[in-house]
Image (cartoon, rainbow, N blue to C red; front, top):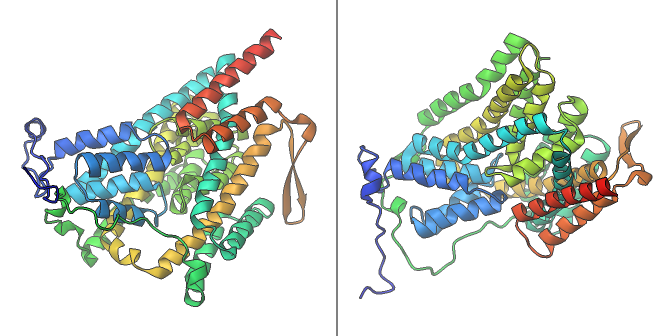
Length: 477
């Protein structure tokens, strides 16, 4: 009988996998065809936001397949948390790159995003075709009210990670005041917070380097994992490799942006969206919720691509479909181009905008991984970087609070006025226009998420059904 302390050799040589992949497997024994099926499974089951998505990957890659060790998985995750963009998608890209080089990273990243892209495109088309149908309006009413609770839950979750002392609380408060009352640019808040943490670490690291990353449990039984026994020579950094990778992915990212501006002009909706979402992709530290307030205010109040309630609808779509939450950019882009199609049909313009916004949002994610992955070991050990990330995350709490307030006043009140006193901007709802059914649904969703710990999908589904029920009661009464 095999000893419990003895390493167990995983059965990675599967005839059915190799039959569909004629190339010899790499040193770790994982055929590319088998990896394709696994990444497709991960992509189709990536519900529940980054926490749920990372849990799915951990179960499949570490526990079931044993392709990557616990230490290596968490090490990659910790690094992905340092980057702008969706950490779960970037973690998949990182592991895919680790096993099968650039092609493997592309495969993992694309299959992680593709199911959500297809689902949100179908929902976007359905929204513009059927939005005037009463049942659809009722569903979206309940969904929009529930999304407010989702944002509050994210605010609490992220706040618990970083608000460990008065300095972090002060940074979060200053961030909220700057963006809510003075409309300070989101990128400026992020850069300022990062510099504050980087400098503050030199004097009071105990106040600034407060984030604590996960690590594998000490004393766990040593096991043999596929990537541990392979010669991963492609993970060694080199100056030439870094420069060539940077050039390739910057070209892929920015060529459509430059071409659209030169061809159509800066005022064209496609050119505007390509530049706007490219900037958003570069500053999404702290996850999608961090940039949603900035995106929502710009898309609604500056560009007029969609209405405040429709932003909630798009967020609900992203919450209930597989893939990263930041995929909401696709709905925003679709609606903006649908309403300003130029010489195209509204449908064709919306589809092209969906493709464009997805491209400029996720191509940078591949750039961060393929360029930075070989150097992540060095960056992860840098305390000053941890301090900068800590202050950025604290600032993100203030930004998400702004998002929660902004969504609340537009969801719960029929009339909202923005009052300006010099550089000061204040949103003032008309209290007599409060929507009590929306308030009730939002309160129920908050109770289910925060107290009963329901999942995201069942909570949103119940609230959407309640929206339909309320509409039926109104119609019959």
